[in-house]
Image (cartoon, rainbow, N blue to C red; front, side, top):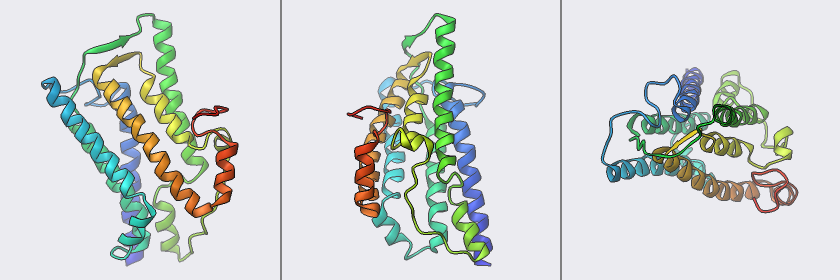
Length: 241
């Protein structure tokens, strides 16, 4: 019964994540979804900035802290280990959905591309960023949490952690983050609210990379150090980033 419960929980967490990431595309691109980055009730500017920073900080803390190896080892004393990854995925998704729901638009335009062909090119570039995100997840383990609970349900042991570097990972160590940066910054119309979102999430990405790479060095040692020397962090063939 515990195995089946874990599987159902993992499935709910995964489909919540899938809905959230698809909503994120519409939220950032201001397409289809009922509440996008530049829509919603207007608030005083300083109130909007304060609320938005609080929402972004909440996501950064949840996403960053729950991903650390030390916390994982601690909280799996209290929850069954097969639930761990799905719990993380569910909490991250719910925190993002809260951000989308409570985000305060700041619609003052910072930059607007008038020329239709250039605007279309920039919009397409944003979707290329999302393609990089999804492609990168499928190259590693897209089924966030489902892999663990499925193995638990069928009685199979999780395989030991390995360090594969398929396709895009030979050009950038963090192609998922690169995809997010492209998707967030490639906007034909950049409002103050969109600029705030892009700037803060990009800053968090760099902090997250430092924390994540510390964990990866702890897991894989010299293998990951050699990988760092060989492959750029984000931008292919860049010696700096």
